[in-house]
Amino acid sequence: MNRATQATIRKFKDADGNYIWQPAERADLSPTLMNYPIAESEDMPNIASGSYSIAFGDFQRGYDEGGGFTESWVTVATLSANLRPIGGDERYEADRLAGRITHEVSLRYRAGVVPAMRFRKGTRIFHIVSVIDVEERKCWLNCLCEEREL
Image 1 (cartoon, rainbow, N blue to C red):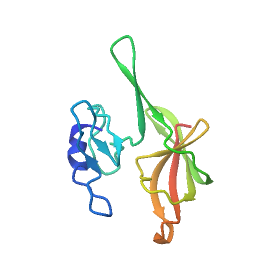
Image 2 (image 1 turned 120 degrees about the vertical axis):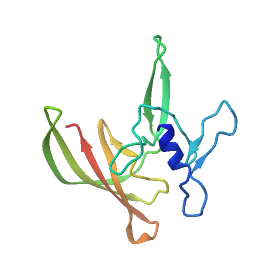
Image 3 (image 1 turned 60 degrees about the vertical axis):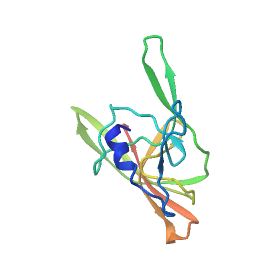
């Protein structure tokens, strides 16, 4: 996330009133969001309604010979879940046909699952759009997800 987004996120608290953003403990460490290190990137968009301004996950950063770097997702957990397709559509984006399928993913309750995260099944990526705590009992989660770029 970029600095402007971090400035907004710093004010967010969890259900117990604790800040979810924590400053770095030492100069050589990164600040954390929900105990995960934050990778700062000014290329990320500012926080806004409908904007994917935070890529939440456990990143690995690898440096190349040209002085640049790549970031990749690291699996946080392997879960058992029920995947059910709900619908789909196709539309033109940037002069090309883009497909999208909506799915409902049902799994046992797990704290920290938020819309900025994603699920992966093999090579398929499911971007989380919303997370619902079924009956608000912390037993089950229903996640509305989108499979994009088909």
